[in-house]
Length: 393
View 1: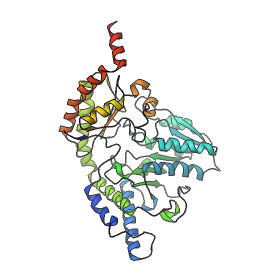
View 2: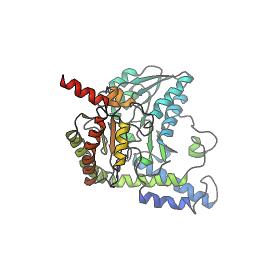
View 3: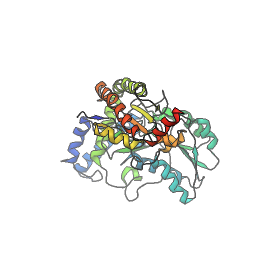
View 4: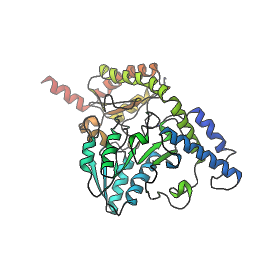
């Protein structure tokens, strides 16, 4: 059976060059970076080289990069740490209604400490308007967080303009850029953000490798207490191998991003164009132009996403339905609902995400096997039966 993996928004394969760079730190170079002997200092040097590479990827300074274990941790660190550091100034947080659960739940947990949270709406494409953010900010607002790109709809946000709105009112601005960094050019100086989250497994780095960019001079409370690591902001012995792999993946992304984009764009556009032509009642989701280059998302009417995923998997095709962090929840995506998509239709969401190794044959195979799957599932769907009966009237 042919195997086609199209769930790279959840994870990308580890780049061979990144793996090769990591191996010595999984074997003979095992020193603790905080140790003063030569083995420890060798590990410390590797960490700082990785920090430089990650900083260059997003046009930051090395001292502004703090390593974490995941995008979710980076988001928790940013939302909680930045808000709590400004407790004396105010207690209001502004988020978009389509943020990742790690941002939404972090803000919700702060409500127990007296914070209030406002959610800014999005349009039918999943876009936030800077004006809506500006209106949501109050004298008590201490933090705004809006993601750079959405992993479920693929939509890229006008972050530079939103950051300007925050700067006008002297409010800190964080962006969850996990789905974006390494896949599109990201310049923190140009965007004007105060904090930004990224994760290595989104651009061919290892799982468990991530970072938070924190603009120089921005106050934040430590997320993990107990040590001097990461400038005293995140205690715990560093995962040197993962961090080294992240640094190498960042270096490769700087070198290859344009070539990767040129490869996946035509394949993505073909999928967006032809899937609705081959199957009726298929609706494209997200912004048609301002979107991630490797991302194609749809809602298929009358069928639940889980049924489609299982049937696709039986044909050797891996895809996703909603965020990887909520895919087992069996609930309609809060992102799609916020975009105004009907609850029943949102249940039938599908996301296909490509990488540099995706081929024309992979897309052709998906387009061939998908229509029979949908036809079979719709024959078992009471919603589709009801639709056909009403159509006859």
